[in-house]
Length: 466
Ligand code: ARG
Image 1 (cartoon, rainbow, N blue to C red):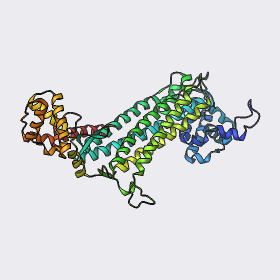
Image 2: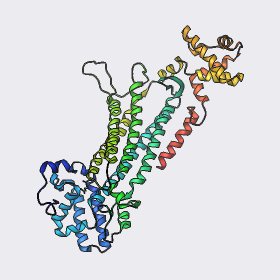
Image 3: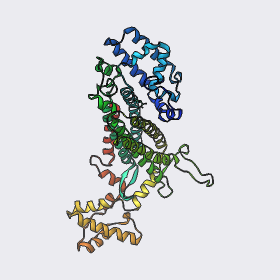
């Protein structure tokens, strides 16, 4: 269908047609556009704007096209976009009467409607993937409630925790990502159809009916807003950017933890590659590619925001350039969630190494200071000083926290405060032991196996109810 013969008498320049066509990425809205046309045509007949007979003929052909698939269309760039290609298909089969389909409708409200329809499905798919990911994390956490690892701040050994506690940190980030998408969905789920080019139409169309037929929760209140807004796309890509950022942080840890220096996890061969020259190499390429793809999604977001900022109301063809950013981001993000989940599921944790790291670099020092406060009722700052001095001493002597006893602690304490602490060796042993240490952090949100169990239960219920 060529929009020529109206005001414009000459065919569009071939290069210009190719340059401005959206057909390359319109396949994403093929099904949505058919749905949109069917709903609009039904409504026109119901409101007696066009005859029932014409409507039925148009709808029958649209349904045939749906079955035949996009290949049945003429996708030459001179056709401009999928809306024109579909109209051409219907016109060839129904004849001139097909033109009634476009009564009180513009490609401006049509494309906005199609994008929202198609995106609703994509959001659901990504949400499903997020739930799968959370499920994996919960399952892994169940197996690792007592797997000791060091927790870091500034990438320096900080305190002892468990692998389960760490995995659940990931799970909670994804839970928020999931909820963010849910919230965005509610703003995608509104119907622009009926806005026509920008100011609706004088035909007595029924917007409530098309809204119901298309399964939107409501229609958009203002027709100028409906055809010119793409904030629903920007916010979706932000949500995807955040998911990607969270995935990327996981990837970063997988990369780091599988180094010789950390030596905490091992990836399956299936998710690793080797070097063409160094036969000993086992490289975490999947995690690296995922880490890098994250910024592709950020670029999509920047691209969209850049297009939107200077646009006068209402529709401008610039808006067409927003669309490929959306589908790019959706596809990249979906693929990332999928592959990172599969990769993570193959990770094997070296429990002994986790314990060794937890014991060898003073990660339980906070608890020794806490014990001094609890047993001797002295201010935490003073206890902090005593233990700080003790750590210095241990480092100088090449000792670990396991070498600390009442005598040594008293010697240091006397240097700092002039007084002995007389802390039982039993107490010292207990607070320094990584497992005891973790068990003692029995506060909601903490790493004790009991608290982690609680957290797992809650997450399982959440996942089940979604
Ligand atoms: N292909 C266009 C897009 O994606 C459809 C709307 C075209 N409208 C117009 N007035 N040229 O935005």
